[in-house]
Image 1 (cartoon, rainbow, N blue to C red):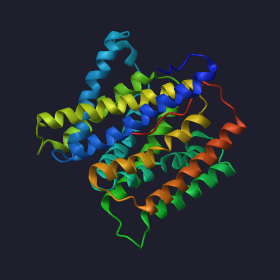
Image 2: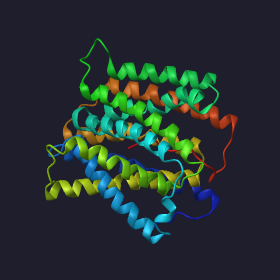
Image 3: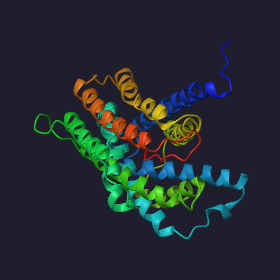
Image 4: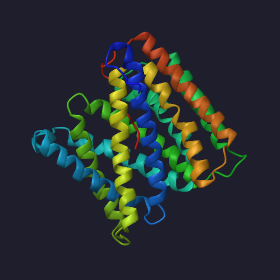
Length: 306
């Protein structure tokens, strides 16, 4: 039996194993979201997910230092971040329920490009030529996926486009919060603020999930936590130039999952557009890391995903 060592030479392989965990977790999250949509609407899904997440986070806090670690002087920024993130999650889960999973993931990959475009105005960062090219490639790729004028623009497609913008806003707010808040505090306020955002519009038709749906709700919550934990572990072990390209494998993987579980066709336009979007992301990443090399274990950009 082969055992992965702990030396520096084994770090890339260990990072790849953690990234495999992230890829499988994100795919499981999409499948669980699709299954939950058979019984619950998107708002109720998000309410119950936040409720379960809040219980998990409080349990972790109780075991690791108590509720004092949630103290904050930046509540307004937490609220702003979670309004953006709520929009992103709503659009993502709505898309998962209504359009091919590969299309959801392809359009979602435009979110880092929106960050690159918005960061100069909101964070004072430079708009470099590499970032401009990444945004242009992202737009071209999105147009290939959506094909305006050639196919009917569905509500799910529009929802995921809006979700990508929501995740971009959430990422920028997270970057500002990360200077003073712990990751656990950011997750706590996410669940605390988003639970009522999902509950209040659902009060008129709120229904208790059945046993099978409760299982899927726990699955979608745990898969989300596992995915981000695996990403964090991979970033600690290897440079972003190694880790992020592996994340791009989510697109062909989810395309195969959609084909196997839901008989979704392998649309060549979605795969081609996704490849163009990913090329833009990778070009920008390579330019950034080439200008400012990072060591394994150094700080990384926050994830914008569900």
